[in-house]
Image (cartoon, rainbow, N blue to C red; front, top):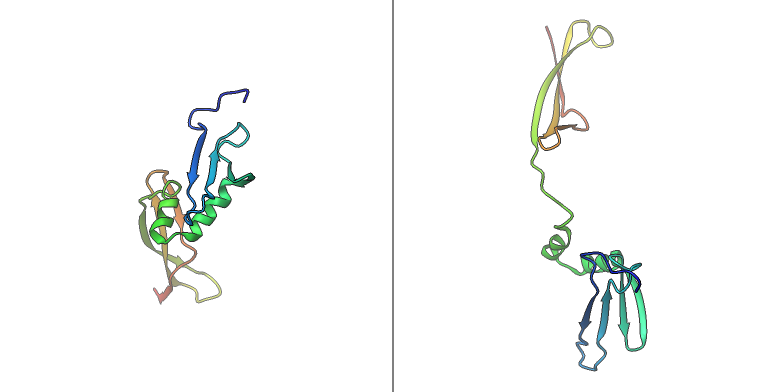
Length: 133
């Protein structure tokens, strides 16, 4: 290997023992060269070698896991964000199509993320109330 691997991408080898005790252990090599770092895992079983994308292996592990194990796999990628939820009643006065002077009240739901100062509107109102002035 011509260059040293970047920090955090050191070569690693894991031997997965054969549960049947027949000596067919699987060797998993991680970051064995520059082009593989963080993307591929090389599995060796005897004299056969297979290179697998890390994403494919993670998908298999996710499918095999129960809810708690799946949460552990996702936890580095998912973070909790506290938001504030508001409901505001908005009154709309019309001049045509309904009845002139009729007031329509619509509930509008939106949330506010204080970390980013972003406001997200809901997909629509829950219901509309109408009444005459």
